[in-house]
Image (cartoon, rainbow, N blue to C red; front, side, top):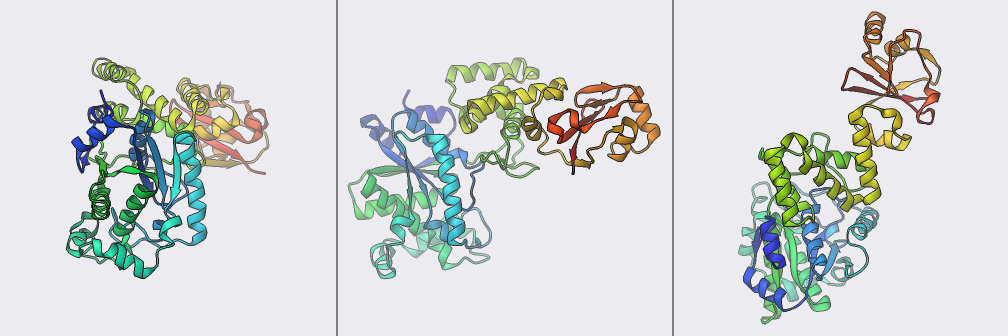
Length: 416
């Protein structure tokens, strides 16, 4: 099975400018290919993973991937997927974001058989007259207006700056083809117009050149909503924005209807392994083996083996309810999304502590819950009304974890 057949099995191909021509080229030799991203932020989120996972598959098959971080186009702004103009970034913002994205890409792709390029290096050297003469003549306004990314913006208006973005992206493909021998550009479904423009520009300048564009389908969940959108906001690849534990939980909580699709797309498991997991989703869905494997594989790819093992450990400890086994760092990850209660570092009777922390509304209710065994402090069930909560005994004296009932956790943060 060649790489395109594998991608088709995984549901990863949406459109290709010439699928059979690309297949023939890939059977003849190893190629160079690229995918671009603009530094609009200092971290990618899981939606960005979609084209880069495909690029990684090409790398594993022996092809040479390039990542283009758009230091030049980042000053302009891609109009696709938006209804309004992007806010222009400062040079300092672009540089900061470039550095963050570069570090993430190296973590995903390593340093062997992989390169990162910045289109500022060549776009910044083109003067206005050369831009109009050498490239503007190759683009028909009517064709540009018909591109989805532009057509969807015409009702509310689009600046010439963002309108010109598709020309700049085409110049990128031509430049990389001439300088690096790159013959394939990969992008999301919304990039189809930009990719075809790039292929057309290369053929305009070099009629006999083999150049291709390949897009990935729009990833939708079973309920019809866009993949990657959560109630808590974006799921980032930066562990400081989304902890590895929260990242792991995102994948662990996927719907049975989506998990096999995500295993195919986001993991590098074999067809046989995925088919076995798909069968278990049908016969033993309560065990959620497919979700666990999905969470393990994607977390390991993005954050590494150790971070994945730690996220898995935290999940198992929380499931068992023994939070005392967590380190302070692990506790911070586990309760990242839980609002914290501020408490003093003084030792306090359990009843008073529960009321002062607003976990209980009255001393009467607090006494009742303690006597009924409904309260645990730092993983220890408390039934003694004389129990004293001492913040210094766990988690470096920084936190106290209370649980009321089986599921209601409260994180109390010690203030000076």
